[in-house]
Image 1: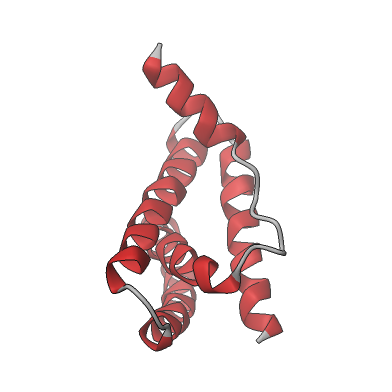
Image 2 (image 1 turned 60 degrees about the horizontal axis):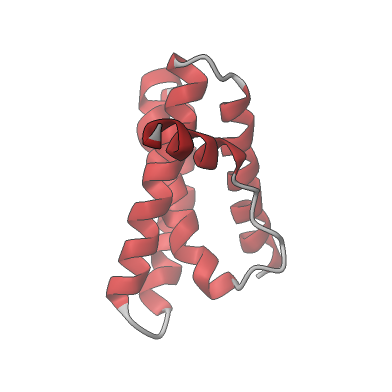
Length: 116
């Protein structure tokens, strides 16, 4: 039953609100884009290159962030795992809506860069 609860939490997690602290969101976005780049290597090489550029922008921002590098790395790894799970479920699993949720998370990241 634990696996089912974990899956349900991952599926039902809300998209971050626009009001979320951008300094905390930057490592999340780097992780999301890292997972997306790897995913796109499977399905669309040109899109993978564009996503890699976006990931690079977030990595540059992380380098400029004050504070604990380990905390940022932890957030990045956690976000990458969550994004990968969504993308895998959307491509290989029974949940085509997972891909939409993954893209919605990237849209939050894109708005963060556009607002800067």
